[in-house]
Amino acid sequence: MSRRRARVCLQDGLFLNLQWLVKNNFVQLNGTPSEARTINWTKQNAGVVASASIRVISVDEGESLLQVLIDDISQEIELLAQPRNFGGQQWYFVCPVTGRLASVVWKPPGASQFASRHAWPSKVAYLSQFRTSIDRAHAGKAKIRARLSSNCAPENCIPPPRPKGMRLRTYNRLTSRFTGYQAKLDRGLTDLSSKWLSRYARDFE
Image (tube, rainbow, N blue to C red; front, side):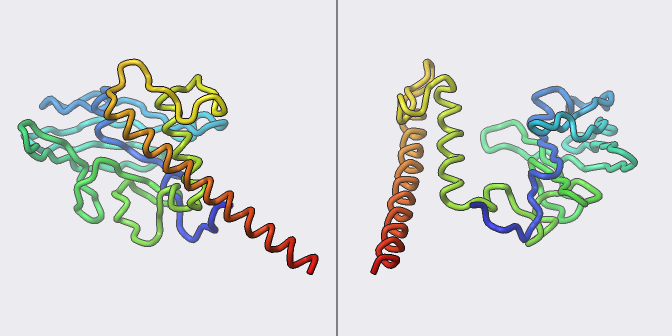
């Protein structure tokens, strides 16, 4: 059972991932302003839940400005390039609230703008923080299984086999985590069985 929520879940709102936007040509940081593009946010079984128009409206060396138009709200978010250790540069959002650099900015339910998660201290949390350790173990196993072999039935392969082309080191790291999640689930089942047996024994004393 999930824990009772005292904070807003970030994943219930909207977000912008700068690296994803660049990779998918929604944002171009090539020194010239870009044309507006429409981005949609979808949820499973609900379809499109929100849309926005985004474009780079100014570009200087190492600095840019991203405009986001969503409903009747217009927001401009500064983009800043930082040098990488081995050459080149990495672009980040500059949080309009904290000034922190962030690869992802969020707009939680009820918020009027996108900002880094640090803009709402103690008020927001990731979905994983609302889950119990058992919930996280199930989710972790499912995520690894999907990455390794989406066509593999759970009862037939624990852990799933190594996909073609995956490095052995990567596979070993993933299977080690998979085994750890399984061990946590096994311990949880053992603890639950012990509790039920103890309760059963008390009822018949």
